[in-house]
Length: 212
Image (cartoon, rainbow, N blue to C red; front, side):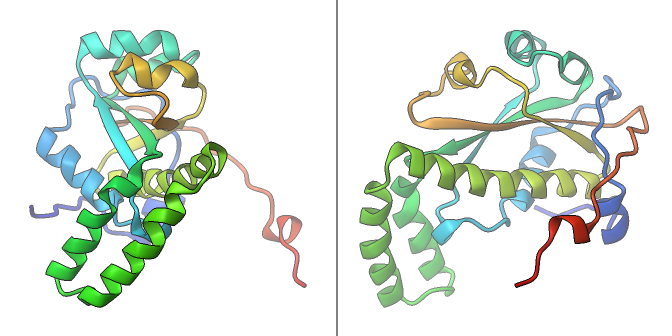
C-alpha cells in the first residue's frame, strides 16, 4: 500500500498539533486509508514486540449513537468526526507472540534460534503477570501507538482529539469485546478539522526535570 503524505514537515506535524473537537462532516476516511494510518501508527515500539494495541473504528451513524452515551462531554467530536477510534490493550497479546516472531524470521529480521529462545522466555513471563501488571504493560504500549497515530494522521492531512473522558467499564462490552481481556486505553476522534483548535501552554523543561 503506497503511503501518500500530505505533510512531511516534522516540526509542523509535531509542534502544530492541537486537539480538534469540530470536523467537516462531509469528509470520510476510506477503509483503505484508515488501515494505512493504523499500519503506520503500529511502527511504534512495544514491550518485547508483543504489539498489544487493538483498534475499533466507529464510523457509522448507528455505532456512533451507541458510543454517544459513553463519552460524557465529548459529543461534538463524535457527531462530526470521520470516525472515533477506540484503542484497547489486549491482555492476551502473547497469544500472537509466535506469529509475530515467526514473521520476523520469515522476513530475515531474526534468526530461528533467537526466536526460539525469546519465545521460551517471554510467553511464560507474560502469562505470570498479575492482572494489574498486565494492564500497566498494555496501556503503556497502546498509548505509544495512540500518540504515533495522532502524528501520522496529521501527516495525512487529518487532525485528532485524544479522549480520556469515557465510561471505561462499559466500552469494550458495548462493542462486542470481552471486557475482562480488552483494556480501554483511549478514544481518538479523527477527521478534517474545521476549527483551529486552542493554543495551550506547557511547563518549562527545567521545572519538570531533575539531573542526578
